[in-house]
Amino acid sequence: MLRLLSQIWTVIVMNVRSLPQRLWMSLAATFAVTVVVAVLLSFLAMSNGFSKTLSGTGSEDVAIVTRSGSQSELNSVIGRDSVNILSTASGIAKTADGQPFYSAELYVVVDGKKRSSGTEVNIPMRGISSLGFDLRGGIEIVEGRMFADGTNEIIVGRGILDQFSGFELGSEVAFGKTRWTVVGVFSTGGSAFESELWADARMVQDLFNRGNSFQTMRIKLSEAGNIRGLEEMIENDPRLILDVDTEAGYFAAQGEALEGIVWFGWGIGIVMGLGALAGALNTMYTSVASRASEIATLRAIGFSNVSAFFGTLVESVVLSLIGGVIGALVSYIFMDGLTTATIGASFTQVVFTFELSADLLQNGILLALVIGLVGGFFPALKAARLPVIVAFRGSA
Amino acid sequence: MAALFDLKNVAKSFVKGKEKITIFEDLNMEIEEGDFVAIMGPSGSGKTTLLNMLGGVDQPTGGEVWFDGARIDKLSEGQLAKWRANNVGFIFQFYNLMPMLNAARNVELPLLLTRLGSKQRTKNVMTALKLVELEDRAKHMPNEMSGGQQQRVAIARAIVSDPKLLLCDEPTGDLDRATADEILKTLQLLNTEFNKTIVMVTHDPAAAKYAKRTLHLDKGEFVEAEQAA
Ligand SMILES: Nc1ncnc2c1ncn2[C@@H]1O[C@H](COP(=O)(O)OP(=O)(O)OP(=O)(O)O)[C@@H](O)[C@H]1O
Ligand SMILES: [Mg+2]
Image 1 (cartoon, rainbow over the protein chains, first blue to last red):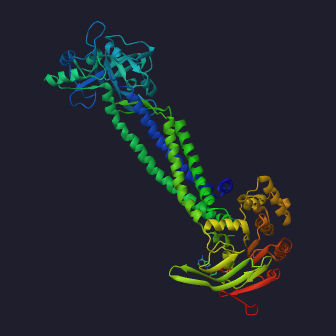
Image 2 (cartoon, rainbow over the protein chains, first blue to last red):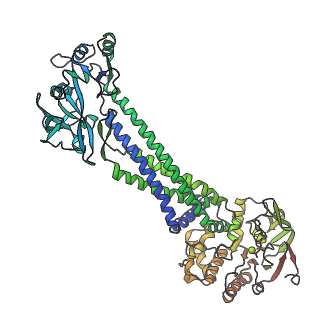
Image 3 (cartoon, rainbow over the protein chains, first blue to last red):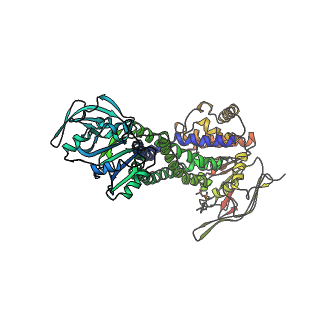
């Protein structure tokens, strides 16, 4: 066994030392794996970050009510009267002074300029009341102060500040004919709300001509996840043409679009991986061909074909792993923590951060390993099966 | 005493597509231990094929090959590899050194198949290099050495594990006269002083003179020297 290992080791050492003779081809194969791993990890980091943002957004003890059939908050409308009726349903938590604990909100889009590209994109702006703050919890004003009720003041999510220009504390912004002053920056600990602008609901109603209607209603539930009371009321009152879900359920449904990105990422990773695999196979077949005389000579001396097999396989795996590690490093350096905005399900920008976890990096390395193993296996078999008489053919 | 090698009714043919090429139909020969046999013959007469069968890197399609009282023509590939490691040193026309290893590492290769520790291996390597008068070139890479020096490294590699048998295919085919003579003298020394049994294929009658006897192969059979072309 020890002797077999020393045989294999000798063959590996010789192969690795002779790599410079096949430098460009080996580099190309390694580079292909680098690209594959980097691309795959980018997709995975993106969906990982995006789904973390969305899953951090929804809460189980808050119900979200939209107009029946509306796909998103943006195209939902709820009149004041519907809000009033629904607020009498059972299962709604009470505020300290005994009122039903809910927040009727507006949700409109305004224009913003992306810092990175300067392009105009939609940013969601939420009209909200102080109850809306209490109801979400975990919201913190990290700079400046809260907007005052009945004024043209807005506070901006931290994600907005990073990604879009013109929202610095104290600056004036114009949306259509309306003008607003930024008085504060808030944080929600990374949820999608951080990609929003918030202002007093009544001011948003006035300035966007929404009369006395809202778009969504968020209701604090007295029992987490239990929306039976709300559902029953909506079912039994023909005036209420509404949908209700827990906020967690609502955002999870939106996040399902993201599963597509994960599969897409793996799809692209695997298709490109096949390309890299072809490169690895080609490289290793060339390696075996160029070492044919050496392999046969060692076999004539008495080296086992196992050593020829593993020498080739290890060379392939080493090349692939180098490529994979570089790919993982590249994506870690350039992607991890990269904050970007993408289109959310409601065609507004959701700001999120690419997040590479150890798990994901492992996936990347694993893919590189598979490419190296498969790409080396068949050439290694060929090396092991090389007839020994090749050694006696003129090679010089 | 039985001969070291005993070939009985050996047949060898290759199948190439639909064609069957017969090299040997009924070849018989004996080689005593300590013999130095030169094999000559025209190109394509089967010299290399015969050497390959003696060295256990190719197998006959018929007949028997006995070595030291045991049949080797029916051994499996793995058993043959072991048999080669224990009994045969090969010397090739183009030296077949590993270009990425220095002289000492090249010579050490057969010892990696033994139980020797690294100190003992180094000692044996130096002994072998000394025998071919290359002990001062131990650290040199093959491409830093002349053809004659490379072939001497190859000889050192062939003898380092002390096999009974040396098989050489045109060992001087790529060398000039003077260098060839040095190599042949070394082989002769190995035969006379160290009792190595040597089978050497050559085109060169001058080389064959170093052997104890010469066999002429033509059309798959041994013929008398006078009949040989
Ligand atoms: N693997 C093989 N497959 C098919 N035919 C082969 C094979 N090896 C050798 N032959 C044929 O067998 C015959 C003898 O070949 P061999 O190499 O033994 O000749 P040789 O006497 O060594 O010739 P040379 O002096 O040119 O080296 C040739 O006709 C050759 O074409
Ligand atoms: Mg030949």
